[in-house]
Image 1: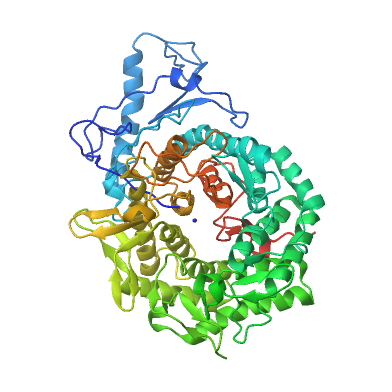
Image 2: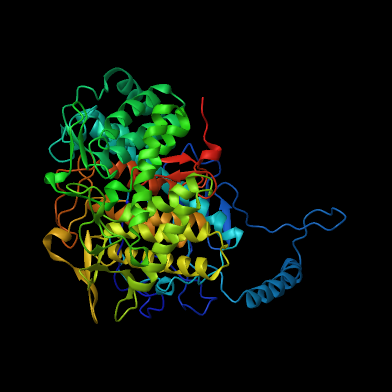
Length: 625
């Protein structure tokens, strides 16, 4: 999961400094001259084998570099050759009716057409200067300020195809120059010291977590090279390591299942079953049905972190999609037992029946016979987040037949609206608070920014319909929250978001201490941008995503990969020697999909993403061989 921020540069800014995005002067929201994009700006870009047609994109126009015409040719109905005399009159007479009709349609629609020009990417993006925050303020309340006709979508797609190759180049750089060269088969690559690290116990976390990214980016040579390692070298029986069940499930089990789904290579399914057996032993010694948070992959010994008597809500409630997929693929007695275990967790939590459908973030599962809540913190950030995500996605995964999961989700979202939504001053930015022991905590976590996309997905699939009051409400808040998260990026000196911001009356938000000023390359913001663009086709989400990508390229890139940024306010900061697997598995994947109009991934009708961005089809579309 990732977030975003911004700084001052409003669309109506009168000094003409628009951060490189020009407004269409035909619309009242701005009065700037547009700067045409010369065709040479396209020719400077490297060739992309994925692009079938090379077009420079400008608002309302498209042209091919090799077909510049200087003379207008017309033909009569009888096929008379070109007529050059009086051509202005001919054009005028043909154009006026269309202009009149277009103007009438515009007035009837009530909203202007998307006004921002599409600017082609440069050859390099690692010298980018952040454009500042509080731009695009017409999006802050979650409204849809512009119409997006098919012509605008087509121009956005053409530009996206240009941008996606830069994202792919970033993936090829980090994978081949970084992971393959310095850490192949190890858990992580150290992006500064250029070493491998088995900090997850030597289970090839980065490789397994990134398999489907390689596949979706058409890095086939690299994918099959990784497959060979999984086949010949990856085992779990000899790993005397205490694995975090939640992390190992979403990264490794989810990664193996997705790799099998795309490639149909049974080695991935075999490894997935072996790993699932070992993770499932975290249920064996639990007296409550709520699994322990850790399990030794070799011995099966299970316990909670620090031997606590509780486990986080998200760790117990974010195992379900993966084990249900495994059972749908294999459908035998053993996987059926696993599936029932993870589904029983949701049933137990449902039975606790918290007020407003909002669940405290700790569940006691030791020294009790019945699970109970162990704290009074309510949050859609860390320790709570993906539990709510899986309620909605289990319902979608199961062909929308298991209504209990949708009901739990809808109840929780109503509680979110009733208790957790706030607006900042003076700018009116939407954010979600935490509640700890009854007290409001006005902080927004980067982790929480996945909720913009989740609310939008929930609205899109609402059983009451997208035109229902509830769906419109959730879509609006999802958009507004995503704008705030984009501001978390845009308002920083580096254009990179911190882990957390604190909201202050009269000052919107600020960084919260040195620890929370770091960025660890999280995916939640670009995840929400991807979902919102998939639903709305509004090019603005691609523009924000492109800013985020350029900021990462400029401030997080090392000689071999990408590293975490210690302080997003410091433009001279040096990346840290750490790159979590989720950067390649999630952040890069979501960015690529955001700019890939030709993708086989269909989040709206076919695929369900687990919380680590591994897409698999819903049960009705799952392919079993």
